[in-house]
Length: 110
Image (cartoon, rainbow, N blue to C red; front, top):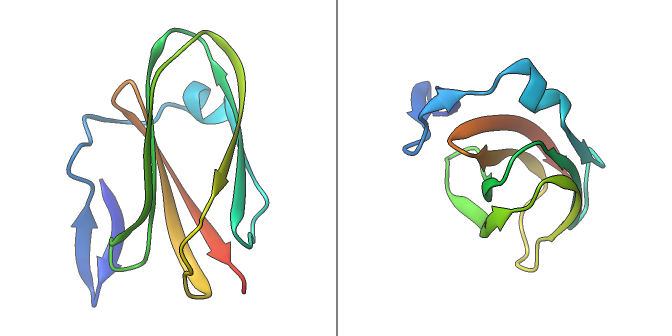
């Protein structure tokens, strides 16, 4: 799966096993967009599985990464705080849940 481009060259996510299905995508709400330094994720987990979240810049450099470990079944409200200063612009939020990847473009404002 292409998650970005670097001067016209496609950038692939190295851990991708399968692409999201619509049901998984509908179980996640990501807001606000645009964001300043906080991203909220409402996540409905239908089965126990591992959850990893990454934020990448347009060159696929990780600016945030966290492995949440095994998440229990149910609704989770996650608050991602970006502590390091990042530039204004577009970023890719990658949510890997049980080897299914959700990809969302977010805009960061200063």
